Length: 160
Image 1 (cartoon, rainbow, N blue to C red):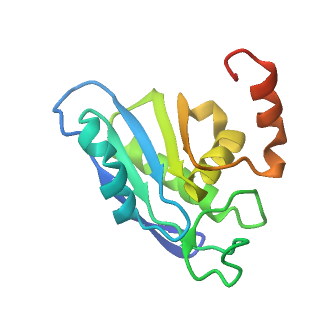
Image 2 (image 1 turned 180 degrees about the vertical axis):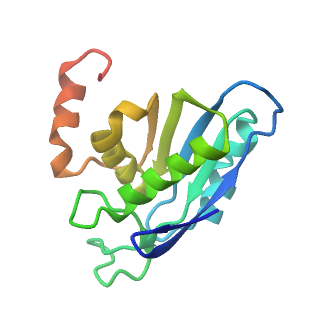
């Protein structure tokens, strides 16, 4: 699927539920790491194969400046809020579309990612946390601005 978000063309691979059902379906957003692609994420994570009842979305990041990629030659995700919030706006557009196109179970919305994709999942947790049932973090770290999440994890029994 494609979206126009703040004047930029954005895209994601979307796998609808394989299981025919009249009930609402879980929704999973799966973000690739820096330098990755939505195709790599779909092949490596293959969540759509593992959870036939879920709607699984593998978004494509944009060229992103990082400490290891200062010239922004490779695709990735924002890890902190900024003046454009390009990826947060992209997420909002995708979520709206998924709710319009499919029967989404709003109590079963998840985000996961690898490395930089986990960093973006943490940002989603910090900025849109009320939306998610859970996040799956793989090889990513919390940004400094997400200190409140870190403190909450350390002071509450279940992290919430």
